[in-house]
Length: 153
Image (cartoon, rainbow, N blue to C red; front, top):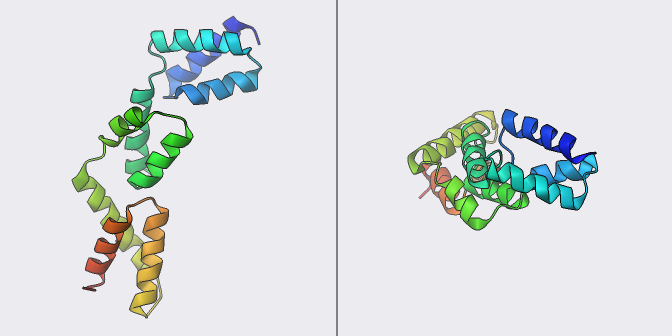
């Protein structure tokens, strides 16, 4: 693909939604853009503020927390998978308020509990804990929330 076409496609893509550098580099690879052209285009996109990994991290954290109800561990893991730096990830994670985070954890706990038919409290606890851990919430927070919810102390 010629450099000019790749640049215009990348600009259109980045104008419609947030993307990080690694996602756009994957697109360049799929489009058959040469490595040198890909780096030149990437420099242009960053300089013109079409791509900003910190802005992407903030948007990603916000969206995955608010709409998918993911925990911090899962969000952080996915951002690492997208090859963002620790600094960019931490800036994104700051968009998740602690109070809202705990409220989301408790809402996910209550929603899962409504679907369970287990009578044994310890089997119920195990299923709740497993579910919340799979959503990416921290072990200590999950155990505290489940114990409080089931009145186990």
